[in-house]
Length: 400
Image 1 (cartoon, rainbow, N blue to C red):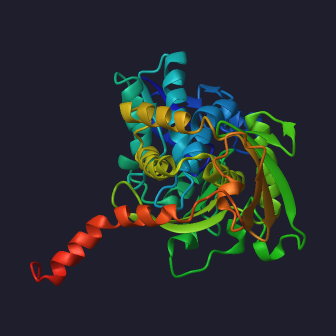
Image 2: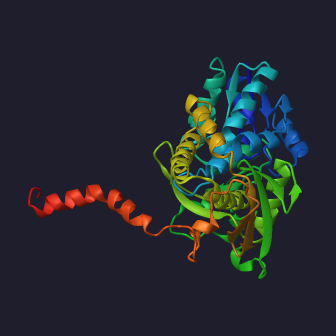
């Protein structure tokens, strides 16, 4: 048997390699998808081999991740439950696609992943794999083995000579890519406890951020960020630049209790500096270039896309429909947004060079203009006519 494993090098997937070999007598092939995580990939390759993998494939998918996955959710301003910027969820369909590709590359007849039976990722991986290649068998060790938790995993790793980074003192589970880093486990699981300072890895505490604000000008073309301070940059460079700037100003921290797809509430800590800045900047620009009805409709589209991404339905007909609407809505979203970074906040302060802005100073001004105030009277009468009729009926006692 040959198994392609979605390998991260973390505690879960580190112990899965020897576990698969022990219980299936299989050859295990590690697929490490580079979506911008700050890993030493040569070291990670060697770690997988030392843990028993027969071979390792590491595709560089950073540009594809941003262009085809992360940037569309910015253009839609998609947030799960109004807060989460989908950093882990949006990477999963790409990782699943590369896992399927890796299975074909290694002539594997099964794939495996390290997602737990309580989490969302098991759904995201498996629904995607079945959509892309339903002939593949799927092995989910967390639903099969006798290991009860991270303490058992650390003991298993020690017994099998597998080096891991987690310790009983700092048992955090982290997921990192170019878009964000998430933290779960340990004291984070107690909603009554503040988040310890050692959890954060990308951002300084806002109170310790510089006392002087930093300004950045972000240029968008049809809803996609393409420039920083007037310089055209590729997607990876844009996000790396903003992650660094946002991180040193404490921008992008979020602690929330979310509703997992399987019905469990979980508490997580997220750091998304670049994403937070880009969402704020896009919203400022779209507020000038989206018609009122388009803006309201895109709020619904963004919420729907967020739920679809979170629920693992990226490879569905609805995703194609939503992305088509997002692309059409963002055709006028071109311009430059000036954002102030200061003490944990990313505040859009000005928008310029927006050729399709719908904002008219002539109409908006409180000074003398061509706007006819008298026209408002007829508009108000017609707008409130149904309420007037309803109120009249009430006064006549025809309704309780």
